Image 1 (cartoon, rainbow, N blue to C red):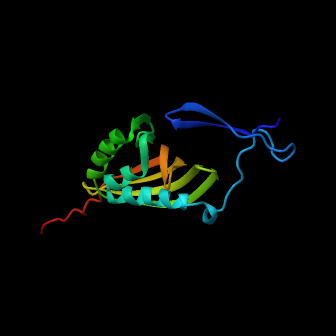
Image 2: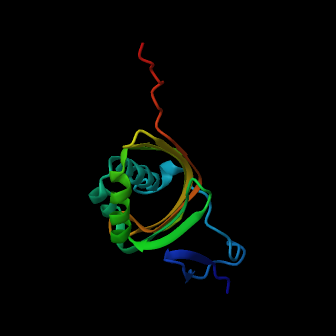
Image 3: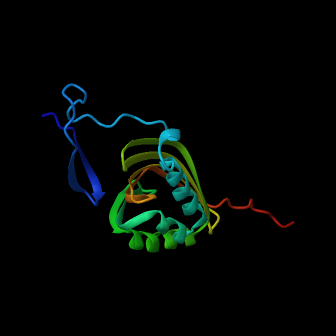
Length: 188
């Protein structure tokens, strides 16, 4: 009997989950092989659209829209790199993350998220989405921050909708630029 199995970590904050599929005809499946890459246009409900909406809602600071994209019990893991190069990591419930994010967004005049790549793999009701992006933040003090990051979204399709069951974010680089100072003007 040939069974196809997939192991994925991260659906529930790092716990391992092993899913064993139904037996297949001999020679038709490679054991322990990942699902085939699927073009975005063939994915039901357009999983990539969820990634685009997630980061568009982040740019608007719309925590209600962000919250609606997650399953109850989902977690968000964030690893940020500060201007000093030190990394900070945290895993939170979506509610805790949104409270933290609202504070971060309030300190910024604008946040723009440019998605440079969205890659999706899926099998049945499971989808894994990798997003590379650049974040442009204009701070209220006149300074700005430029971030290069990668995000991994694990999605699960319920009755009719795809929703995020886990989300991990890693800031690859973060640069802070101070506010531009006006030139000194000498009075004559």
